[in-house]
Length: 378
Image 1 (tube, rainbow, N blue to C red):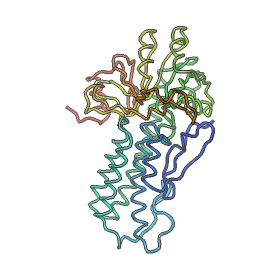
Image 2: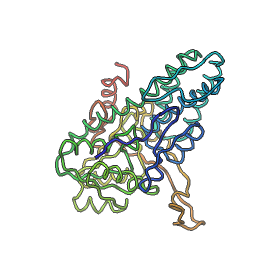
Image 3: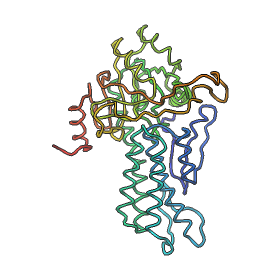
Image 4: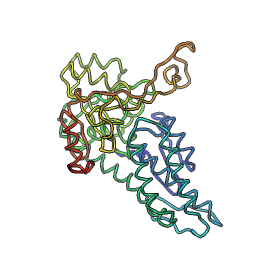
C-alpha cells in the first residue's frame, strides 16, 4: 500500500508532475521544461491543490533559472539542478546576474497570476522572491539560494503533511465513517496530504476508517482523485454524488467531515472547494464535527474575515460539459465558482502541523500563530 504520491518534483532539470486531469484512467507523469507550460498546467489543473501549487511555483522559478544558465553555456547539455542531487558545475562568466534576476522575478509574477484563491501559491512565491533578492545578482548565490529554497519548500511541505496527519488522527477512532470533499490528499500537496493525511495516519495506526468521498462537481476531484488515493492506500472508500450527502447525515451514517482549505483568514473563515459550505451546514444541523486540515502556509492573516477572500470563477464550460460530452444546452448560462467560504463558527476545529485549533476565532488563531512562529510575539 503506497500512501505517498509523486505529485510534483524537480528531476534532472525538469519539473515533473502527475497529470491529474487523466486520473484515474491513466497514471501519467509529464516532464515540463518551460515555465509558460507549467503556468498552463496550473491553470488547467494538471497540477492542483493549494500546497502543491506552492511547491510547483517554487520549482517553476528554479526551472527558469536552469534555462537561463543553460542558455548562457557555450556547450549546453545535461542539466544543472536535481532534487536528489547536488547542482552541476557551470560557467557563470557569460551570464548577467541582473538580467537573470529580472527574468526570475518576471516568472514569479507570471506564476502568481495563474490562480487567485490558494494562498500557498503566493506564500511560496514570496519565499522564492526573497531568495532571489538576497542573492544580489550574483549568479553563484542565485543558484545556491534559489535551489535551496525550492527544495526546502518541497521537503518542508511533506514533513508538514505528516504532522497534520498525526495531529488530526487523534480526532478519529476505530470504526468511524468520515466524509470528505474534493481532494486534499497527496495529489494536492507534496505527496501525503492534509485532510487525507488525517485519514491515512489513523488508518496506519490500526484504526478501521471508512470514507465517503463526494464526487465534487464539476471536475470530479473526489471521484477521480480522492477515491484513487484511498484505494491505493488500502482504505475503504465509497463515492457519492454531492447531492446525496444530506441523506447520509440524516440517516446518521457520518461520524465526521474532514476537508482541506485553500485560504484561511484571521477569524477562521475558510475557503475550500465549492460545496464545502453545504457540508458545514449539514454538520451543524446533525451534530457532526466539521474539521479542516491545513498547514500554516494556507493561513492569510492579513485578511480579517471571509468576505475578503478572492473567489476564482472558472470557465462555464466545465459545468456544461464533461470529458467532451455536452451536459447542458449552449444557450444556458452556467455559474462556476471554484470555492466557497465556510464561516469559522461552523468549524469544530482547524488541524495544523503545530496544533489543533478548536472552535477557531481571532484570538485563538493569533495565539496559535504566535506559538507556531507565524506571527511575532506581542
